[in-house]
Image 1: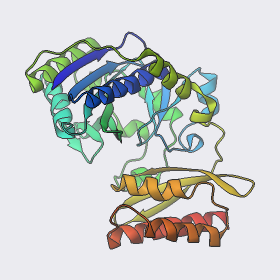
Image 2 (image 1 turned 90 degrees about the horizontal axis):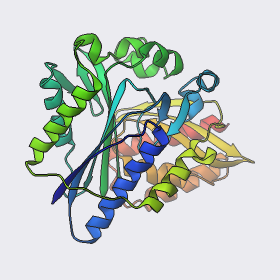
Image 3 (image 1 turned 45 degrees about the vertical axis):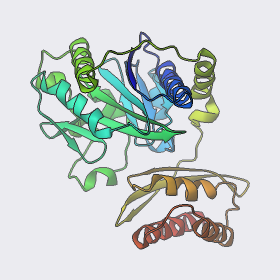
Length: 336
């Protein structure tokens, strides 16, 4: 096994996410050679709103205001919610072959770096890092073709006022936590410890990564053609999909929430945008993805859903099946 650390000189969010994808492809090529590797990528971004892979952009931010202010709209490959980036963020990405990947190790690296700056941080749920009870880091994950990606933000001196103005998450997302707004929920590290800056924090994260693996990092070279292909996709209107319809439905169940909206064309489901904290991610992709291109009528949707359940390659416990039954009923009710 070998390790690598990459730091970006670019502040373009499209370029950095394309580079992250190219790093994942590099690891896939190493896997084919029988090698395992663990990498970290540090980067910053100009002002941008970065959305989860399956989110409906119109339900998550004020698009016209973002355009007026010259703020980029970016859709990433991982799930999770929308976040605002600017140069007050330090963004990190951990990438590893599936056989050696450890989310716990990744979080330990970040917590150790923060600790060395005198900051006591804790993990909250699956996605957040808190200091003093407020969020300083959000995280998202994906597994694709044997490579795991875990990326997140560290808020150092983010424009929280602008973030709160731009982002429009559903009220239901905060109600269960007794939280009333984006701004009340997050905090900058600089507000807690004025001496913290991006450079110092980045250095501490690199130190913690080096100690976690106790080995020298190696220089690597990405496939530039693959990088360009990824970049072309990220900047395309088809991928960003700003013109999604403006509607949403929230389904709550014993295993988590599922918020969705349906995009249709001539009575055919073209896309189901969603955000969810349900753990059965692959099952969601199997079922929700399977409903695309189905006719928008109750009989067709229900028939296709039954087929997807009966042919599912994943085991489906009763609680999970009950949750998906509720989701599909909500989709059917949405189009009536």
